Amino acid sequence: MLTTPIFKANDIRGIVGGPEAEWDVDGARALGRAYVDIAGLAGETFVMSRDMRTSGPELSKAFARGATEGGASVVDVGLASTDGLWFASGHLGLPGVQFTASHNPARYNGAKFCLMGAKPVTSEFLVELRTLAMTYDAAGLPAPVAEPGTVTTRDILGEYGSYLRSLVDLDGIRRLKVVVDAGNGMAGHTVPSVLGPLNVDVIGLFLELDGSFPNHQPNPLEPQNLVDAQKAVLDNRADLALVFDGDADRCFVIDELGHVVSPSTITALIASAELAREPGATIVVNTITSRSVAEVVAENGGTLVTSKVGHTYVKALMAEHGAIFGGEHSAHYYFRDFWGADTGMLAGLHVLGLLGHADVPLSALARSYERYVASGEINSRVDDQQATMEKVAAAYADRGTVSWEDGLVVRGERWWVSLRSSNTEPLLRLNVEAADRATMEAWRDETLRLVRGEERA
Image 1 (tube, rainbow, N blue to C red):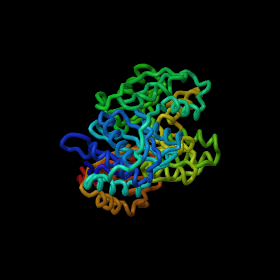
Image 2 (cartoon, rainbow, N blue to C red):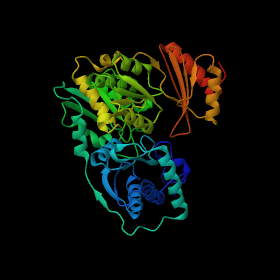
Image 3 (tube, one colour):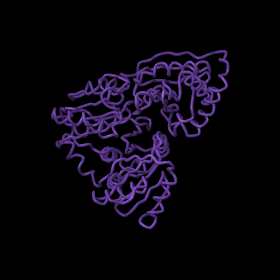
Image 4 (tube, one colour):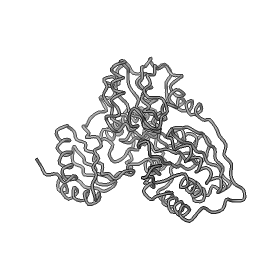
């Protein structure tokens, strides 16, 4: 079974099992055969991995069956973070598939795809994949080819950890005490391999792999999922905390005071360091990254390129411009040295390296990059997302510059408002930034009244 809603703008994601199921093992098998046929992989090889979700083993096995029946061979690296799959794709020179639903609740699972060298697939590819997979699911799969592919296994975890450490200057860093909250996700698998050889004391939270997520949801964008790490930093007098999402491709950072360091600030911090290493390089951000990043890039002689929100868009621009680094508000960080792909673990290593070589705490290190006040992302469910955005655009037309490069963006001299539809959920997402809190809150509250149809108090 496959249903249309699982096919998102950048990947596949939907409910597995139960009365609300949106796909199952038969659908995964159809998807595997369609993937081979669309990508022309008969007689070729791709790499496959999965996260810790309980449905992962059976879905990935069914996908591999469909793929081998289509003539492709599979290198199964087993449990891996999503950036572990990007590494395997780049390191082995193979296209790849990762079974994961990222930060979604336990009953979800999904798949992310990449071309050889961790290059992103196109939206057109995903549309073709949806069409053919659903055709196979409804009408039946073609007969297996005369020479089916094979499945072999390989462990890449040690190579992954060594490669990441080779990309960051970690020699001579001072001893750091680091809280790591894996949220029972894949960081619990990768952190010992990556951080184990370093001069750090790791205080682990929820490192046990458990796809039911018994402690908190693996979504660090939600403030309640950061509380445990914030408390652990203060209780242990740690230097910082790293909080990962379920598939560990995103990393949130908490300073020694227990305060969240915004992903835009981390983007500016790493961008500054990368531009010192390569003056004049290009940095990619998305449309709702803080203006402070643009200012830091300009001050350091870099070139800024702005992308739509979403890893496929950012990756494409990273490749097009040969960008050295990219960052998104959602704590996705992209590195040219990592095949232009996103990796939360490498971003965490950069923060450890920069802090370990500094003689100030993280709060002080980050302060010069925190120049604006942001609302954070606020979600609203509305019946007609486009009509709602157009209503807000009309209300603000004479108060700022209106553009539609990625949903609705309205910009003023020292503020901006962004409204965009979610790529993965039926939500309208609001982000607001201004030079001071009062201005930010005024634009935030007015926009929410317009979006939600609330009357002014």
